[in-house]
Each structure stands twice: as C-alpha cells, then as structure tokens.
Image 1 (tube, helix red, strand yellow):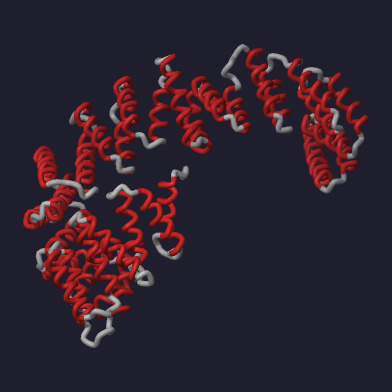
Image 2 (cartoon, rainbow, N blue to C red):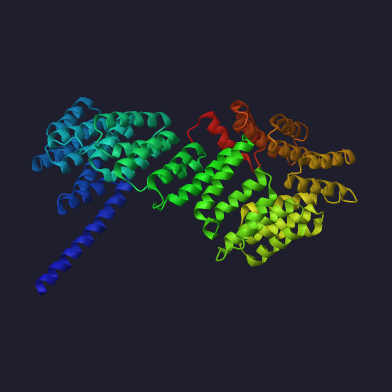
Length: 599
C-alpha cells in the first residue's frame, strides 16, 4: 500500500514538474530565447513519451538559431526511430524550405505522401502538418491519397470541403460538403451554417445546380430535396421552396409542420401568394384533425387581408370576398373567445376598408363581453372599439373605454397605449395643456413606439403652441387631424386650406402639406401624393417633415410606382443629407438592397 502511495506521489510530482517546464519553455520561446527553449523542449520530448508538439517546437528553435545541421540530424534520428510518422517528412521539407532549397523541400513533401499508409490517424496528422504550413494543395492531396488507401471516398469529405474553402474554390467546397452530409446526415445543421456564412448569391445558384444533379442521379437520398428546399428559402424563392416541402410532406407522410413553417417565413417576407397556398394546402390536405388546421386557416385569412389592402390596389369586390371568407370561418368555429383575433381583423376590415363602422362596432362590442375572454385580448378590443367610436364622433364613449384600459393595465404597455390615445383625443379636442402633460409622462414608456409617438406630439405642440395668441392655428390643425382619423378627407382638406389662408406664413405649412400627402396616399392618388412630398422637400428642406417626406416618397417610388432608380436616389439622399434622421439606417439598408448588395 505504501509503495502504491509513493508511486502515485512520484507520478503527480513528475506531472507537475513537466507542466512547470512546459510553461517555462513556452516563455523562453515567446521571448526569443531559443537556445534555452530548445534545451527544455528536447528534454520534455524525451521525458514525455516522445510528444510530437515538443519535437516540433524543438525543431523550430533550432531553425530559428540557424543550427540547420543539428536540426537535420534530429529529424533523421526521429524518422529512423518512428518511420510510420510520415508528417516528419513535412518537418524535413520545411527545414529545406527555410534554407531556400525548394527542390529538396518538394522532394521531402512528396516523400510524405508517397510513404502514407492506410491509417486514418496518420493521414489526418499528415494533412494537419501541411495545413500548419498553409500548404492546402498538398493537404488536399494527402486526404485524397488517404481516401484511396482506405477505399472510402467520403471519409475525409468534410476536411476536404474546408480546405477547398480556404483555397477559395467554392464549387469544390460545395461538392465535398454535400458528400460529407450524404455520408453523415447529422452534419446537416453545421453545413447549412457554413453555407450561410461563406456562400454568395452566385454560389447558392451553383449549390442549387449541384443538388438538382444529385437528385436526378439518386432520388432515394432524402437529404438532397430537403437541402434544396432550404436553398430556395435562402434565395427567397418561396414558390419553389413550397413545391419541394410539399413533395417532402407527401413522401414522408408528415403532419404539415414543415409546410406551416415555410408559410410563416413566406408571410413574414411578404410573399403572401405563396404563404396562402401553403396554409391552404394544410387546410385541404391535413383536415380538421390536424393541430395546424385552425392556425393555418387564421394565417391564410391574415395573409389574404394583407395581400389585398397592403398594396392599396383592391376593389370593393375583393373586400367583399374577403369578408365572406372571414364569416365562413367564424360560422364554422363560432364567435367566441378562441376566435377573438379573427373577429378583431374582421372589425378592422369593416371599419377601415368597407367603411361600415356600425358593423365594426357591433363585432367588438360583442367580443369584449365574451365569457372567460383573455383580459389582454379584451383590452385590445376595447382600444379598437374606442377608436371606432372616435371615428363616429362619439368622444365620450371613446374616452371612457381608453380610461378603462388605462386603469386595468396601468403599468403595462396596453395601459400606456390607451393613455396615449386618450391624450391624443385631448389634442384633437384642443385641450393642449392636458395632452402635453400626458405626452411628457408617456415619453418614459417601456414601449419605444409609444414613447417616440408621445415625444413627437409633445415637441409638435411645444413648437406650435403660442405662435399666435389665440392658438387658432394649432386648433385648426388638430381638428383636421381628427377628421383624417375619421376618414372625413374632404372636410379635412377644407380645414387645412382654411389654416393656410388665415396663417400664410405659419411654420405649420410643411405639416399641412404632409397631412395632405397622407390623405392622397390613402386615396391612392399617387400623382398628388408625390407632388406634396416633393413640395416639402424643395420648399421646406430645413423643417421637421423633410426627412419624413423623403422616406415616404422613396418608399412610394419603390413599392407603388416601381421606379427603383428614383427610390435608390432618394434613399441615398436621406443617409447622406439627413444622416441624423431616424430613417437613415433603414434608408441605407434599402439602398444597398436596391443596388444588389449581398446583405
């Protein structure tokens, strides 16, 4: 027992001493004291079971000291002792190369590959030795020779892919990463990450072409169609991605989760056509027993609504058809707390697009009284209902509902939203002092959007309050603002024209033009919208609405008028001439996208 204890203590002491010497050798090496480092590394190598790392460091020290003969003798001695360690020929070749003897160096490098044996560990060590010297071509040759010796062309596929990446040969990199995934499908996630990191758009095209070829050659390998659908998603080609995932869903008899995930991605990227097809596929193919059946129907309706109203290009017939689909869904699943979100969307459709406020109010009035309804959902319904009452001119009903939500969710974002709308209602009514007090409080809201809106209105009131002794100009403007909220556009125009007639030199001129632009935009009168924005940019470049007008005009040119060159020009003007604008970052992003940058 005592003997065993002494042996353990001796081994521990040896290990501790070895670690100390290793750290000291490393310190000498880093300080350029190569003679001291060489002595220690030689001793460590001999004492630590011929550790390759210590030998390599020993050789490096001798080369740095230009003791080439001693170095060569050490390498030859090591080769004689361990001939199977073919990476030593790389060390030998490096010695010649450091002396500018290229021919002798090449001879030793070739010896390393020539003497390679069918041992995976030795093959890997040789390739790594070449990699350390950044000799990627030779490392590739080592792996390819090793693959032949092992009679397994896939065994080093992942390593070869990495080497081709380092060489900048993306075509071969893709080929070997695909080989590696075929050999080991568990690598799929890591390979996808590498493709995202290193492939450009043209490389994704090549990846797509290689996948097509492999699918044609062997349709029984499931990873290739799956990877192809992923490539389509990366390229935002959701239409073709849907075809692939639909085929996989049918082939594998899946539950539709893959389809639902793709549909959600397409919807978030505003490819509503593809998203609708994917959601409707789930409804039609998976049936009512599927857990995705109701969510797919709901999301399909949401996409159809966004598709119709998002581009301002719709007819009453389109809206009526959508209204019918909403009601069909509600007839099937009922009007209750579980379908509350669909009822809210239908109410929005009735109020803002079909101009039937009475119907919208009736829907939400029913919703907020559902037994067991989620309090947050009820509060959201109350806020929207208050908005609709305000649009009808029912000020008291609106403020009552806003106040109920404010009280029930005092420290919540919902409460802040209700308080903001109540304060805005006071602004509409001309009670600027009380509204200003509330806006100042809301500037500290945890919701950035509410805080920014509150700050904007607080600054707007401060800038314009008291510029005339009766506050008439600001009251006229706030009354026009309310009329716009109520969709009473012609009355709003009259009010705004009256403001300009009474106060022709007032600083509200750019705000009046901006409000008119917003009205024309809602009316889809693009020519007049553009004219209003351009007048602000040309005549009121120093005013607060200038950058808003620029961004709105650029967005209009890009998404409605399809004039990408003009849009690009305007986005560039924003981040150059208005670099401090809150729109500058988004403008730069859109500019680069239109220019074709890979972002």
